[in-house]
Image 1 (spheres, helix red, strand yellow):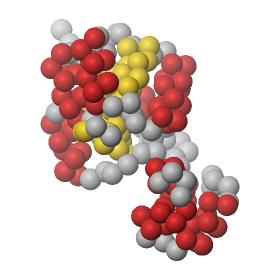
Image 2 (image 1 turned 90 degrees about the vertical axis):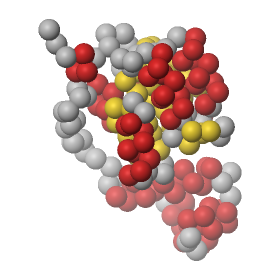
Image 3 (image 1 turned 45 degrees about the vertical axis):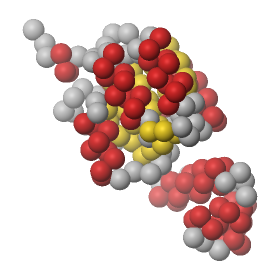
Image 4 (image 1 turned 120 degrees about the vertical axis):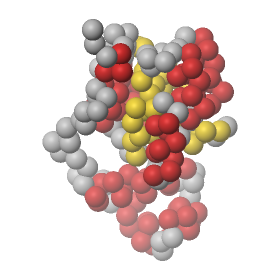
Length: 183
Protein backbone atom coordinates (compact mmCIF):
# COMPACT_ATOMS: atom_id res chain seq x y z
CA UNK A 1 0.00 0.00 0.00
CA UNK A 2 1.40 3.41 -0.96
CA UNK A 3 1.32 6.58 1.06
CA UNK A 4 -1.52 8.85 -0.09
CA UNK A 5 0.64 11.96 0.45
CA UNK A 6 3.07 10.84 -2.28
CA UNK A 7 0.50 9.84 -4.90
CA UNK A 8 -0.27 12.28 -7.66
CA UNK A 9 -3.87 12.68 -8.83
CA UNK A 10 -4.37 10.81 -12.12
CA UNK A 11 -6.80 13.48 -13.32
CA UNK A 12 -5.08 16.42 -15.05
CA UNK A 13 -7.61 19.19 -14.29
CA UNK A 14 -5.92 22.50 -13.46
CA UNK A 15 -7.23 25.83 -12.20
CA UNK A 16 -5.08 28.91 -12.76
CA UNK A 17 -6.06 31.99 -10.73
CA UNK A 18 -4.10 35.04 -11.91
CA UNK A 19 -5.03 38.69 -12.40
CA UNK A 20 -2.28 39.44 -14.95
CA UNK A 21 -4.28 38.58 -18.07
CA UNK A 22 -1.33 38.15 -20.46
CA UNK A 23 0.57 35.92 -18.02
CA UNK A 24 -2.64 33.94 -17.37
CA UNK A 25 -3.18 33.31 -21.08
CA UNK A 26 0.46 32.32 -21.70
CA UNK A 27 0.53 29.93 -18.74
CA UNK A 28 -2.86 28.43 -19.65
CA UNK A 29 -1.73 27.73 -23.23
CA UNK A 30 1.57 26.25 -22.03
CA UNK A 31 -0.17 23.98 -19.52
CA UNK A 32 -2.73 22.82 -22.11
CA UNK A 33 0.09 21.79 -24.46
CA UNK A 34 1.52 19.75 -21.56
CA UNK A 35 -1.69 17.74 -21.18
CA UNK A 36 -3.69 19.63 -18.56
CA UNK A 37 -7.40 20.48 -18.83
CA UNK A 38 -7.18 24.15 -17.83
CA UNK A 39 -9.79 26.41 -16.25
CA UNK A 40 -8.91 30.03 -15.50
CA UNK A 41 -10.03 32.74 -13.12
CA UNK A 42 -8.92 36.35 -12.73
CA UNK A 43 -10.07 36.96 -9.14
CA UNK A 44 -10.54 35.27 -5.78
CA UNK A 45 -14.32 35.28 -6.33
CA UNK A 46 -14.01 33.61 -9.75
CA UNK A 47 -11.53 31.10 -8.33
CA UNK A 48 -13.89 30.18 -5.49
CA UNK A 49 -16.75 29.68 -8.00
CA UNK A 50 -14.53 27.38 -10.10
CA UNK A 51 -13.60 25.35 -7.00
CA UNK A 52 -17.27 25.03 -6.00
CA UNK A 53 -18.31 24.05 -9.51
CA UNK A 54 -15.65 21.37 -9.96
CA UNK A 55 -12.66 21.15 -7.62
CA UNK A 56 -9.59 20.54 -9.83
CA UNK A 57 -6.76 18.11 -9.12
CA UNK A 58 -4.18 20.90 -9.50
CA UNK A 59 -4.14 24.67 -8.99
CA UNK A 60 -1.76 27.55 -9.63
CA UNK A 61 -2.83 30.58 -7.64
CA UNK A 62 -1.44 34.11 -7.53
CA UNK A 63 -0.96 35.34 -3.97
CA UNK A 64 -2.19 38.91 -4.42
CA UNK A 65 -5.31 39.41 -6.49
CA UNK A 66 -7.41 42.52 -7.02
CA UNK A 67 -10.21 41.32 -4.76
CA UNK A 68 -8.24 39.55 -2.03
CA UNK A 69 -5.71 36.90 -1.14
CA UNK A 70 -5.21 33.87 -3.38
CA UNK A 71 -4.59 31.72 -0.30
CA UNK A 72 -8.37 31.77 0.24
CA UNK A 73 -8.74 29.82 -3.01
CA UNK A 74 -6.06 27.32 -1.92
CA UNK A 75 -7.82 26.82 1.43
CA UNK A 76 -11.23 26.31 -0.22
CA UNK A 77 -9.73 23.84 -2.71
CA UNK A 78 -8.09 21.76 0.03
CA UNK A 79 -11.41 21.60 1.92
CA UNK A 80 -13.32 20.42 -1.15
CA UNK A 81 -10.58 18.13 -2.46
CA UNK A 82 -7.89 17.17 0.08
CA UNK A 83 -5.75 15.36 -2.53
CA UNK A 84 -5.51 18.48 -4.74
CA UNK A 85 -2.04 19.92 -5.30
CA UNK A 86 -1.76 23.71 -5.35
CA UNK A 87 1.17 26.04 -5.78
CA UNK A 88 1.25 29.75 -5.03
CA UNK A 89 2.86 32.29 -7.36
CA UNK A 90 3.84 35.74 -6.21
CA UNK A 91 5.88 38.72 -7.20
CA UNK A 92 6.13 39.72 -3.53
CA UNK A 93 7.83 36.71 -1.97
CA UNK A 94 8.73 36.59 1.68
CA UNK A 95 9.26 33.79 4.18
CA UNK A 96 6.16 34.50 6.28
CA UNK A 97 3.78 34.27 3.32
CA UNK A 98 5.54 31.14 2.02
CA UNK A 99 5.08 29.43 5.40
CA UNK A 100 1.43 30.50 5.50
CA UNK A 101 0.84 29.16 1.97
CA UNK A 102 2.27 25.76 2.92
CA UNK A 103 0.23 25.65 6.15
CA UNK A 104 -2.94 26.24 4.12
CA UNK A 105 -2.13 23.32 1.85
CA UNK A 106 0.05 24.62 -0.98
CA UNK A 107 2.75 22.15 -2.02
CA UNK A 108 5.13 24.87 -3.20
CA UNK A 109 5.63 28.61 -3.48
CA UNK A 110 7.21 30.13 -6.58
CA UNK A 111 8.38 33.68 -7.17
CA UNK A 112 7.37 35.37 -10.41
CA UNK A 113 8.39 35.26 -13.12
CA UNK A 114 7.98 31.50 -13.23
CA UNK A 115 7.71 29.62 -16.48
CA UNK A 116 5.55 26.61 -17.30
CA UNK A 117 8.42 24.18 -16.69
CA UNK A 118 8.90 25.54 -13.14
CA UNK A 119 5.16 25.26 -12.51
CA UNK A 120 4.98 21.67 -13.78
CA UNK A 121 8.04 20.66 -11.76
CA UNK A 122 6.45 22.08 -8.60
CA UNK A 123 2.99 20.59 -9.27
CA UNK A 124 4.25 17.11 -10.09
CA UNK A 125 7.09 16.89 -7.53
CA UNK A 126 6.60 14.06 -5.07
CA UNK A 127 6.42 15.33 -1.48
CA UNK A 128 9.85 15.46 0.09
CA UNK A 129 11.69 15.38 -3.24
CA UNK A 130 13.03 18.62 -4.62
CA UNK A 131 12.82 19.13 -8.37
CA UNK A 132 16.07 19.28 -10.30
CA UNK A 133 17.41 22.79 -10.83
CA UNK A 134 16.76 24.06 -14.37
CA UNK A 135 19.45 23.36 -16.96
CA UNK A 136 19.38 26.97 -18.13
CA UNK A 137 17.95 29.20 -15.39
CA UNK A 138 17.15 32.85 -16.11
CA UNK A 139 20.11 35.13 -15.61
CA UNK A 140 19.98 37.75 -12.88
CA UNK A 141 19.79 40.41 -15.61
CA UNK A 142 16.78 38.67 -17.15
CA UNK A 143 15.00 38.37 -13.78
CA UNK A 144 15.60 42.09 -13.17
CA UNK A 145 14.33 42.94 -16.66
CA UNK A 146 11.19 40.79 -16.17
CA UNK A 147 10.48 42.49 -12.83
CA UNK A 148 10.84 45.95 -14.38
CA UNK A 149 8.54 44.96 -17.26
CA UNK A 150 5.92 43.65 -14.84
CA UNK A 151 5.90 46.85 -12.76
CA UNK A 152 5.84 48.90 -15.98
CA UNK A 153 2.72 47.02 -17.14
CA UNK A 154 1.08 47.32 -13.70
CA UNK A 155 1.65 51.08 -13.83
CA UNK A 156 -0.20 51.30 -17.14
CA UNK A 157 3.06 51.72 -19.10
CA UNK A 158 3.67 55.03 -17.32
CA UNK A 159 7.45 55.54 -17.21
CA UNK A 160 7.43 58.22 -14.51
CA UNK A 161 5.20 56.20 -12.15
CA UNK A 162 7.21 53.02 -12.78
CA UNK A 163 10.49 54.84 -12.06
CA UNK A 164 9.05 56.24 -8.83
CA UNK A 165 7.85 52.83 -7.65
CA UNK A 166 11.16 51.17 -8.54
CA UNK A 167 13.07 54.00 -6.89
CA UNK A 168 15.17 54.67 -9.99
CA UNK A 169 15.80 57.66 -12.21
CA UNK A 170 13.32 58.04 -15.07
CA UNK A 171 16.03 58.27 -17.74
CA UNK A 172 17.70 55.11 -16.44
CA UNK A 173 14.39 53.31 -16.70
CA UNK A 174 13.84 54.63 -20.23
CA UNK A 175 17.25 53.28 -21.28
CA UNK A 176 16.42 49.87 -19.79
CA UNK A 177 13.02 49.78 -21.50
CA UNK A 178 14.56 50.72 -24.86
CA UNK A 179 16.89 47.70 -24.80
CA UNK A 180 16.02 44.14 -25.73
CA UNK A 181 15.45 41.55 -23.05
CA UNK A 182 18.70 39.99 -21.80
CA UNK A 183 19.20 36.24 -22.25
